[in-house]
Image (spheres, rainbow, N blue to C red):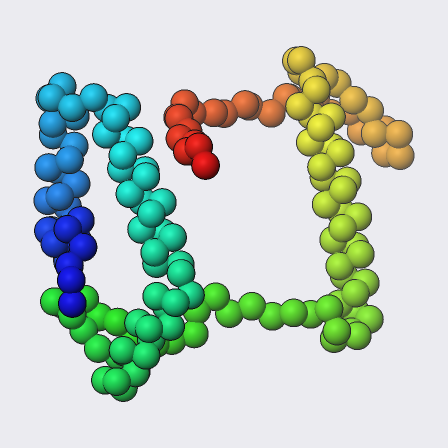
Length: 157
């Protein structure tokens, strides 16, 4: 079997992963490598490896190889096991009237909550309101806007 050069020096355990990460981080922090170039290349590798790992052909041949050893095997300390992943249930054909009623209530509540959040975001300062039904007076404080700075990387086709 031919080797893919990129995978020749690939880490195979958590300690080696940490070591590789540190070896990638240090030259960027030391100013030896342009951080933009480094993160674009790293992101590109991540996307390529994600495509590789998510490819149904790779999944199928890997599962076939694992099955040769039963339901699990290991390679260089990494354990591979066949198991159910991403279990989901489809409730659309249950015909349960209670479930359907609860879904309708949830949708109505979700819409009311979303509408109220829009109202709260529109407030510019403390606002006093009076409940028409109870006469209760409340002071509403606008929500605190929280954000962090980051960056995105988009690749051309």
